Each structure stands twice: as structure tokens, then as C-alpha cells.
Image (cartoon, rainbow, N blue to C red; front, side, top):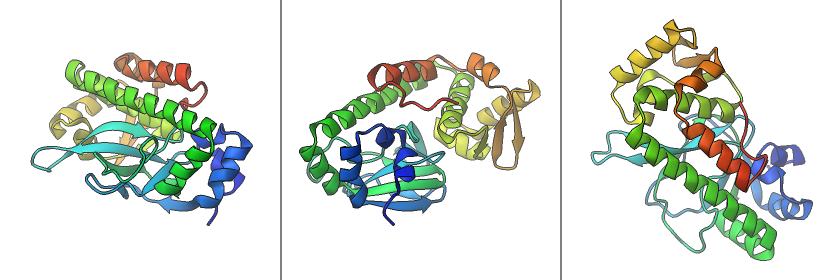
Length: 243
């Protein structure tokens, strides 16, 4: 199914393009409704598709550990961005696995078609290059965060980042899944969630975290989320979704 103008607008990265560039991309795109855990690209495979999350859909880039038992998350992508083939040219393998974290609507375009569109439009090429800078900044910040901040700070940071992208205070994830995302043991996450629940910051149901007090969560988190928001605002004003 070819996306409508509303579909294109529901991805902020696409919604800010000029009409000519949206018309250039739209006929090459396909609407896909995907569920959580769907794999968009596998590490080592050729990047043949580029994906644009729409509305509250969200995906994550993950790097497998040495024994392949877990995959640590290095970046979240929601309606502010895209997954795969943004600035590359030619046939290249994916370094990270990308999977859907929060199900919803995605727009898919063949990477070769996107590359041709960028050749036809310098504005499109520059816009996606700006986005790649912001995505790389997020990866840099995550690396620094994992090395210097506490698990409590990182847990709060992830909940805030997921909340802004899904546009929802209810986040579908188990304690075990959140522990894998953060690269820590489940017992650490369970203790942190229990404390946040006792403080009234969040509530929990089976497989769901419900944020009740965003400001307290921000006070608990490190400054990494704010740093990423500010960089997005400087490089691509109005792109980063607010909670």
C-alpha cells in the first residue's frame, strides 16, 4: 500500500520535507504494520531496506554480546528518524541488529530507491546527513552514559526516551527485557523498579511500565536525555518528539 500524506506526516523526519521531496519518495514506499520484536535488519546482512517509524512506533539498534546471550541497546529510533541506509551508498552490511520495540506503522523503502532520491535532491541528501549526525550523537552519548552513570539513572533515562517516542506513559516491556536493554542483571532492574514504584514515580502491570510522574523521573535520570534533545534541536529543530 502506498502511503498517504498523513502517513508521511506521521514520521517527523519525512513530514518536514518539502512537497517535491515527499512526492519523490512516496511512490517508492510501502506501509507496514509491525508488531514488537519484529527484526528490521540483522547484523551482518546487507541493508536492503530503510524504515521510517510513524506515530508511536519505535525501534532500537542492538549489539550482541560475545556469547550472543543478550543484545545491548545503543540507540532508540521513533518518529524523529529512520533505520538503515540513511547515508550509505552501495552494498554494505548492517553493523547492528534493529528490531521493533513498540509496534505500529512503519514506512519501508528500498535503500537503492532512497539512494537514487538523494542523488536527485541535494536538499534530501543534506537532511538525511543531518539526521545521521544526530543518530551518531545518540550512540556517543549512550556509550558515555553506560560507562559513567548508575543503573538507576540509565533506567530513568530509557523510560523517558521511550515515553517521548511512543507518545505514551504506558510502555510494554518486562523486567527481563529492560535488563537486557541496559545490559545488566534482572535483579538490579527489579530493585530499581520496585523503588520507583514505592516512590509513586511509576506503576506496573504484567509486562507494562506506567509513568505517573515524568518530572520526578527526569530528576532521577542523568542528563543524557536532555543532551540528546538539545543536539537534535540545534541540528534539526522541531524533529525530536516531546513526551
